[in-house]
Amino acid sequence: MNPNSKPQKNNIINIGSVKVNSIVALAPMAGITDMPLRQLVRKFSPTCLLTTEMISSEMLMQNRPEEHEKITVFKENEPPIAFQISGHKPFMMAKAAKILEEKGASIIDINMGCPVKKVVGGGDGSALMRTPQLASDIVKAVKDAISVPVTVKFRLGYTAAEQNFMEFASLMQDSGADAMTIHCRTRAQMYSGSADWKTIRNVKKEINVPVFANGDITSPETAKECLEQSCCDGVAVARGVLGEPDLLYRIEHYFNTGEILKKPDIFEKMELLKTHIKDEIELRGEKVAMQFVRKFYPYYIRGIRDAAVYRGALVTETDFDKVLKILDTITEREVQSV
Image (cartoon, rainbow, N blue to C red; front, side, top):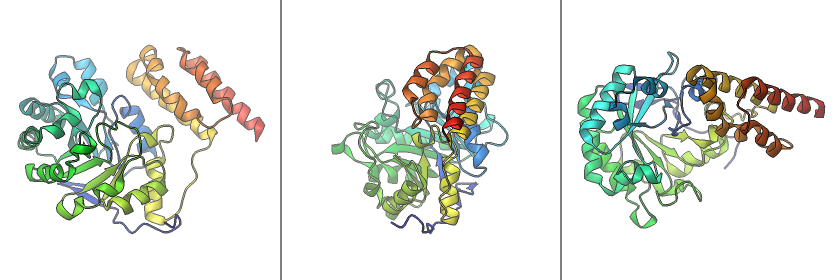
């Protein structure tokens, strides 16, 4: 692969009635792709498809409006945006999809790939790959309930011996899915090992709707390699965006021009982190937000000298002003070392 060559890909994907002027999507991540994180991604890329964190259909049906708002809130600049729902009861998934459509979802995405034990144990997520008829019923019920496009995210299969992604993809299309995203690992792998992009290269020979490949896309170069190996229409970026909210834009830029843009330096990252924290505080309140953002610190400061020391200080601090002082200390030290 020549990293300096321009990928030969159309930069428009039509998902049902929704036109997406990008072949790059933000994949859903539970507890991660909330509004503040999506806003950082959208700051750089005005065209990529955004996806919310996973929303439980059963929780959505409960009478907890304050919690609903934290999960479903989004801003005017976010569309095209897919709201992802999870569950295993067709009628409840349909009701949840209708609620989210009314809130402004551009697309409803159905989670059939989450590998987490408590999700799978309830029959949700990737457990649905073992019950394809139920998965089909869910897609049909959601499709009948709403007017916006319906997409599905799933894996290669439940285990290495149960790789039914080809049959599953065909069934999802026949059931009404307007597009799909395939995480190129099995449920048994969770997030270990390497994503096997080559395995799904024949899916597009059978499927007419857009297919996004997902897993281990951490740079423009890996995004290009993923497209070449998978023969998919686009890529969905997940963990690669952590600490690098500009990654989707850099991938888009590479696809459009063949140019590799530089990653943000530590000074830019500290400013992005400050914005991220401020937005989380605005959404959740300082007490909850300062605990919530701890998961992001390691990604923003990875690679710097004494990262472990700073991480230890940051994750134990609950006061926003004190966290800002730590981040400023990091910046000042980096300035002195230049």
